[in-house]
Length: 361
Image (cartoon, rainbow, N blue to C red; front, side, top):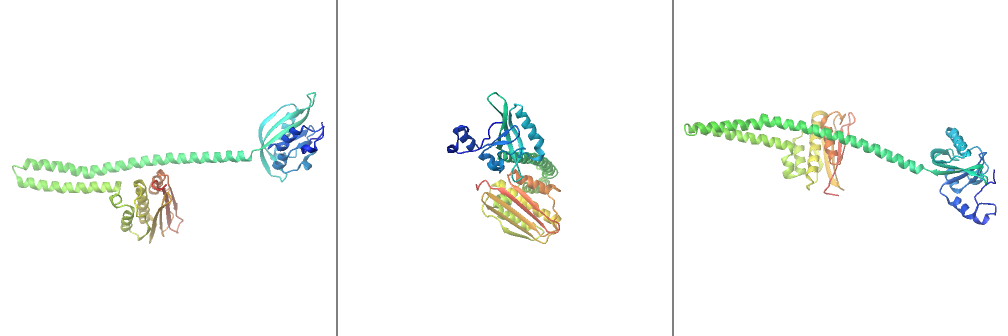
């Protein structure tokens, strides 16, 4: 079975112990090196084995019975030992082994038979690599991949909703243009044609037709302005966010406290997103909240614009239940931001959006 191998300093080596350089390599190895006899008795236990498994050399030299094998892996450990005793090499076998305190440690095993001068297998040399950090990194990579897939799926769903909302809005604009300004312009063209036909024979009638046409032009212009205002508020373009938010607050049917709004201009896309977040929130308060007051705040700084709208209404708002809040979520997330709605029943609703400000890196 051969003599037992123990850790020693170079000065303690006797002629029948391993070469000094080999012993130094064993002692300094980051791998837990353990040599078993054919009876499973441990003949070598290096410092890395002490660190990984917790038992000292004195506790382990001569100990039998594969003590690092937990009960759940006992059969596996015995089968691996039998394979090596039969002359087989084992490489990069991932499993768990038991520490002195009973906890399990993830390890990778490399094992090889120890042979005497005649080639007969007389022992089993095993190198254990602590792979806890590697496993943790792999688990983190797996988690991040799952999170990325979920984000990509949500992004695809968000884009689909944006496209669908765009189609609905386009049809609404087409219908409004057809039923409103377009019909007025058709009427205007007919009126001008009739006025032109009466210009010489009946100037008074022609003048009346032209007067009516002028009125139709004014109405068509007003309707087009209303449509344009729905696409992008003119007050926001002309006067900025503070004035636009004040206008929303003034039009609200519930008293609104405007705590803070930046006076400086923000990027157009950011201003539009902030405006529509507040507009949709106030609309929801009017429709559903039964609130007596609303408080809103817009703060810009550190590369982020934060929008907060809260009310003292009945709560119970569900962002997934309606298209309004879902559309706001899509709008905010399209800019790389987040939108959170907290609305416990009976305790009001708080909406918070965080939108990146590219002008303030």
